[in-house]
Image (tube, rainbow, N blue to C red; front, side, top):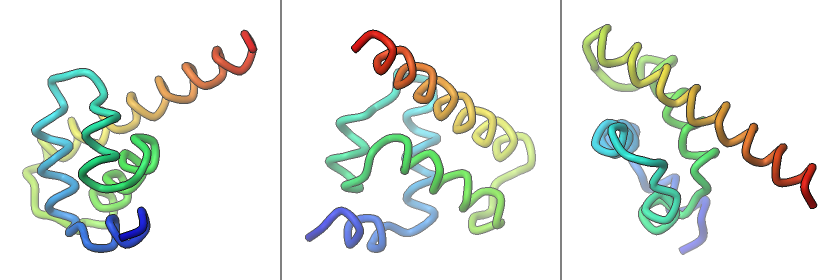
Length: 88
C-alpha cells in the first residue's frame, strides 16, 4: 500500500481523532508516518482541511483549539526546516 493509498483509506474522523489524542504530546512524527503513511506536515494540513470543510462534528471550542494546534505544528515545522536548511 502506498502512502497516498494509506491516506485515502483514512476517514476524516480518524485523522481528527488521532490529532486530538496526540495534541498534548510532542509531534508524533513516527506514529503519523506508520499510521497514515504521510509526513506530519501533510497530516496537519489534512486535519486543517477536514476541520475547515466541516468534515467532522466537533464542538466549536475543540475545533478552534485543534485548528490552532495544527497551525502551530505547521509553523514550527517550517521554522525547524528553515533552520536546518540554513545550517547545512
